[in-house]
Length: 353
Image (cartoon, rainbow, N blue to C red; front, side, top):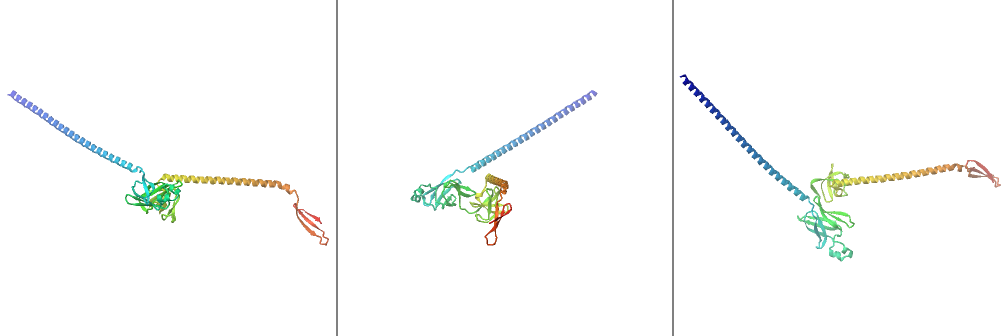
């Protein structure tokens, strides 16, 4: 009986052990499955993040490439804008249609018509003297008016056009000019006739010479102040020949010939002025030194002459000479009398007659 009970107990115990082992294995399997699931999930997340990162990197790369392409296009556009304009020849004609001269257009603006009025045509010139007939077409008479019509229909007028050689049309701050060589070989310029205008943005310019700031754009208007050589000045507008300027609390006008946007030109003008001042001072110092030397030489000569005169004075003083002679009559009617003689040494003598 006892043996049977023990066998049953042993069987139950073994079953319990087997059951517990099975439960442990099942638990471990469950934990392992969860770990695998977590690993797969982490891998999935990592893959997703990698894909997202790759997508973002690709997008950034594309955007950067696009921006670089835009910058490159802007750089090319700027380079094309800054490229110098190739001068284009424009045939200027007289009012009767005859050829006047050729104008080189360096502005990039298309000219549809160029007419010179008030000048003799080529046929009229041929009818005059042989000298006038042999002159080139550029040598038109002063007082002519040149009218240039642009593609936009605007007319730009140049008055009192003189004899021109190698004329070239240029533009500066929306104003137009004709640079040329005159008959003496000097460079010169004609400005168009245009109304005063305000610039879109103020300009910084530099003064090339001491100059008055005028109340109006004429040389005979009142002087409001002085713009000094090399100083910086603000330009807000003007005409082709006069700039409207601001300096401190002064607003007025300065001739275009005395201003430049090139600071190096102003610095060169300052250096030239300083060199000229130094030259004048050196010449003045040399002249003063020469004058002082001449005066010293003259003074030395005068002193030498005085010393020589002084050395000769004693010898001359030893020679007594008559200074004056005065007659005294006896007053007896005999005609006799005497002279009172005074000598250089102060002595006197009596001489009867």
